[in-house]
Image (cartoon, rainbow, N blue to C red; front, side, top):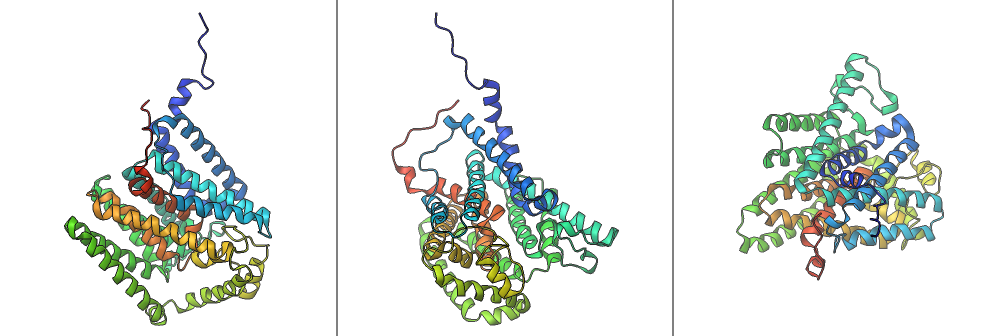
Length: 431
């Protein structure tokens, strides 16, 4: 009788790596790291952050292998993500700072891989719970550290970037490095906590405390851009709620009407942008951004078609970023505008691919939220509205937590509406 062939990996290990509990914990840690990159770098530096991400990627890959037969891979990844990431990767061939481009691409791919893992092993409500739990903890920790710094010891915590201004009502930065980043995270948390409340995935008292925590963080951050972003998210929420009440047979016409109204609003906002800036009391902050954007715009024509090469976050010692910093008189880690940032790094082709990615991710998630009964489907389009609007003032959607959320939303939307779902395929095995 032939000897039974022993598996290379013990069955117990495979079952553990593919278990629901392991998926849940790894997803929670991955989202936590994505939102905590500033704090992690401040405490243990870039080597520690890179090591943490590398461990997460390896564990996610092993978990994928352990449950490969249970996952539906057919038509899974949106082509728009593959093409945009691929274009960023091949910019390595014409980049004048190839090592920085290689590092930027690997960093981008690492978070994309983690996002794909989360989107595959967690369903929509589980993803909302994961993001909600992470942001509840981080916002609570941020306010606790601000109170400790501003009220108890009355000293800034410099290595975290906390200035200790809470005694004067702010602005505060928390664990996110700047008031703008704190306000963006708090707004995403606000949307997440509302969805948790509406889906009854957490107890009402916890949801109420969480929503209060998010609102308090937004108010204390004193971000000059969050008012505009919050207004857009609020209007999108009302529009989505109204669409969900319309009969299915009439909903298409309302969708087209809403799209036309949105285009008109965007045109008016651009035409009267000076007035809008004055209403937001953001002229001083806008001037900083405007000077930076002018310098970026002057460098774009040098490599307009394909860009200078992808880096993601800006290096501090590489041209043309050193020239931009010298001209503006201050150090920047990004272009404070995701669209201009992409234009500078990967050219007009990259911008078109990036806009296509955003349009498909948002369009699919919006249609799903409009047509599905469950409120949980509203989370993805509202988070994307926040990210897309913020992208006019920040580049956070291109890296780390912003990029992680974008890929998660894009993959989940593709699972629900991709045309490739209708192609012939083999059903995943249940094991």
